[in-house]
Structure formats: structure tokens, C-alpha cells
Length: 125
Image (cartoon, rainbow, N blue to C red; front, side, top):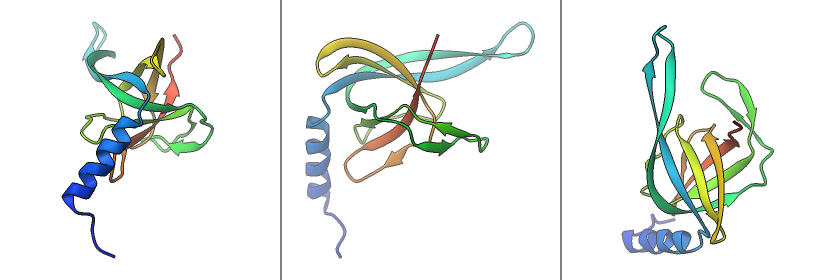
């Protein structure tokens, strides 16, 4: 079996992105210590991008400390998206309709030939 050519990969990535019906913002994680030396998490919003939310979760993933987590959803992202395991993803539009929900990345970012996938858990405030 031969490897995919660059024009084939580009076509797959374009098709994948055109099938993403939602809009999201990657919220990049950072932290600073408070007065007691405890880290305080903060998140910086990135630009709005196309994404695809599949909120039929329920499978298990291993956290970085080997804790088993049940996911709430999987989010598909464009191939060139920068997202890390401590980041959050905020859905701003679902099928073109304004709807805000925030998820934390709970599993490793998976890269396929046409895009990225991340397992997420809903953030409750």
C-alpha cells in the first residue's frame, strides 16, 4: 500500500473541515501561583475555528496520572489546530446556532490524515 500523496492529504483535510458544522474556540491553559504558592489556572481564548462536536461520549480514557475518566464528547478539529491536554475547547455555535458549552481536554490529541480528535469532559461551574 502506498503512502498518501500531499495533494490527496490536502483534499482529505479540506473535505473534513467542510464537514465540521460547529464553531469553537481553543482556550489555551496557563497558570500563575497565588499568594500561597498554589497554581491558579487561567485560559486565553484563541480565534474562532470550525469544529465538529460528537457529544455521544461515554468511553473511558486514561488521564496523565493514570486516572480513568469517562468522556462526555469527542471534538474534531482542523489538522493545523494547536491544542494541548490542559487546554479547554469552548463551543460557540452548534450547527450554526449560538450555543455556549465548555469542555476540558481529557485525553491525548489524536492526529489522523484529515484532522485532529480530542476526547473532552464538560466543565461545570
